[in-house]
Length: 89
Image 1 (cartoon, rainbow, N blue to C red):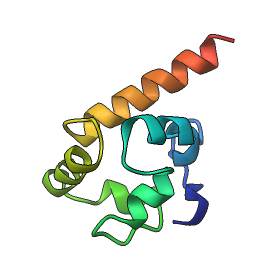
Image 2: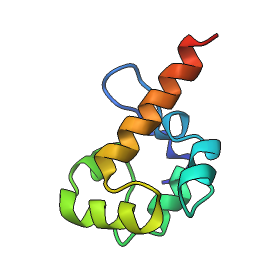
Image 3: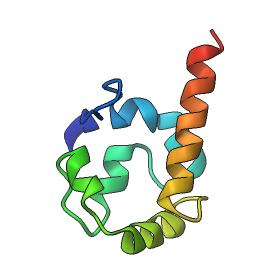
């Protein structure tokens, strides 16, 4: 998942834009979202690969390697911080 440029349907925001290096350093054991997924037990090449993963194992991985209890909380905080930065300017 080199560079993690996979984008979502809505807005084309890449994972690296949503989960910035600053965000990852502050809240996780990793320097980037690409590093986060490369150390996971799953082979991730795209955002679609992430969306196909079952919630329970991902939530366990997130709670072990981040300050969040599950993936939904991590996504929500990242989205909230992204929006605050974008609309604060």
